[in-house]
Length: 307
Image (cartoon, rainbow, N blue to C red):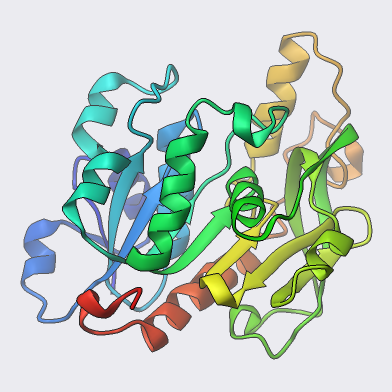
């Protein structure tokens, strides 16, 4: 089954060209099944790029997905046209007031990791989101800064500032081959990393019930399961396109910023060469497994979600 998104959303044409099955409202209405409702709280400045990245992954499963795009209520973005935001996004306060529920909910990263959580302008509303997920979402997926923020708020796990930016494609070790979220995973895989902060394994281990599924000695825990809060936290970026790190690197070089060539990314460490994507298959596996696990466990009656 395909992902259901508006036919005039930019992701519709991009995913169609890539061979991902998509459908509009009229097509979806003709199928006598309940679609899985997935919300995407998009905190990234490049909204359209992020929409496409996550739509690509959650739309590649055999299930029908209904995607809802959500934004912080009072936070304005300068990188995406106001018309796009007005047409396709709803503020969280509107979603909250509606009482609607979601089978799955993704909270993206945000380029604000140098700030203390409490100094983020929308922190109070974001903590309402975290609380709301416990009664209105069956499974929540916090990504990078979004994952760090959620694991901090719900479990007290701190983030730590790094001396240098972790930037490149790093190896990961599969720590739980029996996890349904890692079904089909190799013993080792790679993932793009781009951050100035880290979550430390010792802090995760200090919280009963948190389980690290993917990790690396250099980059630390990557994927953490929080069964008590029906949540997953991932601190790196399986969703990245092949050239996302290149875009960041080229931007910093053009601005004269001090930036190292991303590790293990370009062939022979040569930025003039096109990067090779070595994480795409595991990205689809992880998000496909997440969607499948939601399908297997979510109530058919959405009123029972969060109960």
